[in-house]
Image (cartoon, rainbow, N blue to C red):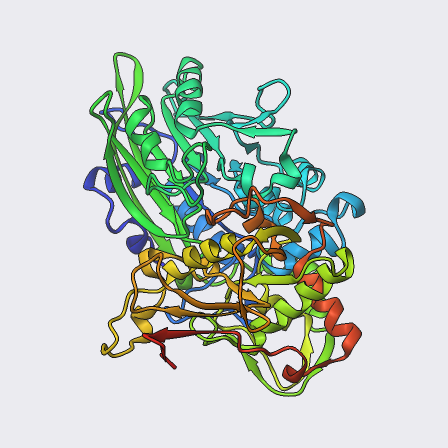
Length: 582
């Protein structure tokens, strides 16, 4: 557990001084400390539990997860700083990401059952002051999102999510919180919530024609003066956007990871609590180009592994509160015990989810692991390909040859030999994607595969193979390495990007440039996620909103047996000048 001393470690002397003051009294020099705590990318984690492994969460760094752990740290900070001088915000991606979140969105949707969503239940109990929409909030459609927003006691913010019809904000843009100071005028803290413009691509089916997502910088330039005009002494932006200034998508959508750009370009922002990138940023300063002032940024990792803590020092100048100092740190939730109040509150929904994910759906003839999927054709990924191909073939018939695209989402996924449960399926297919099919030509498939093959670092013919540096070139994530089934091809990693796909054949023959195929692909990719060529503009042949994870479960249940002999086809491999790498 953190002691009080450890919690204030790393804060400037002034901050420590301010933190030591009586909760609601100003010092003789009228200096008061206001503390803003922040989480982001909680992704449905309430308890320190791994639903895929059916055990307490653990990773190589021994991080812990979940709001029960966060709650303990929040209670400590409130006790330390004075609850009336602290605020708690979140920067989005809250209601998606675990089987718990899935169960109450799809199996027993809270918008139909009227049961309180587990994330609303936990966040209400902890006492959040404001929560911002992340892109994954839109995964389950607007009705479910509206129910969760209604169930939340804290306002749910999203200034740049606007009505497609009127251009007006579809969600509350900001909120101003008032803190009382004994014998002084109150301190007003404004928080502006900004979500991610990528929603327009990633959840196109749910938002098209209903919502538009505007530029983060433009939106902040519009709203920050409004918040200041209403008397805010401190302005915090909670943004569901990383700080790289880059986007994972192309086209004319606003920048995806614009948090630092907001800090740099929008006057009047004191700090940005950001998320989306799943990184830990304890404290980072960006100079505002207009005012020359330092803007503080912090990001609290993901899943409740960290809590960001920002301390603002304020002093009275000409009768107004002015920020005179600021600093931030991230606290590791693995130092805290779970808050038993939250554990008890979550128990019924947690137990229901555990029972659900442990249902056995089939028997596997042998153990199938995804560990080598990023660089070898593995049977477990072929299983996804088989299910997707079967579903699309059944739906559209056999006029066109049906191919399938899948990516290695998780290197830790495994089907054990023997009983395979829903949680094993969910561990393999961790995203809530739906199945689509598009029409692509032979030439377009070649372009697509060349783009995908950027994932590998170039390796000379005689160079030793190091698995640690073979993949993820240019920080390309595993989920953006697509593998194609139904054709055969080699990837020559000794060649430069764009010249790697060789021996591309269908039924043993080279593929004519104009030959047409139906290609099964997930909605994230078909909508433009990852920026792959042709797929987002290709004619759509099938889009019945079938969840791919559920299709895997249904297929396994129907067959009863998972036997690689039924679906494993080694149709691609890595080579160097024709010689296989493995």
